[in-house]
Image (tube, rainbow, N blue to C red; front, side, top):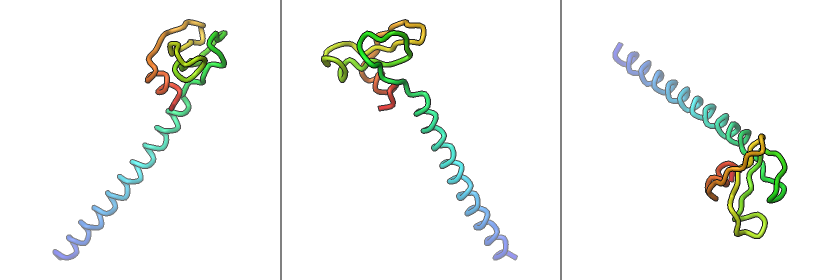
Length: 90
């Protein structure tokens, strides 16, 4: 009887590990897809009309300007270079 209980316990633990691994995989993949879906688009030029888009001042244009977030409403917000990369999904 003890052997049966030990075998059942081991099998239960193995099933639990498999289920947790499957859940971790399924949770991680949609998170990546969600991050990619919400990534902003880069602006076409440094004087964007409308938005939403991100101007990465360090890597666009002459490379010495500010990084900007342009909202759909046209509002322009200065952001850090690091934040521009995060929002662009880089």
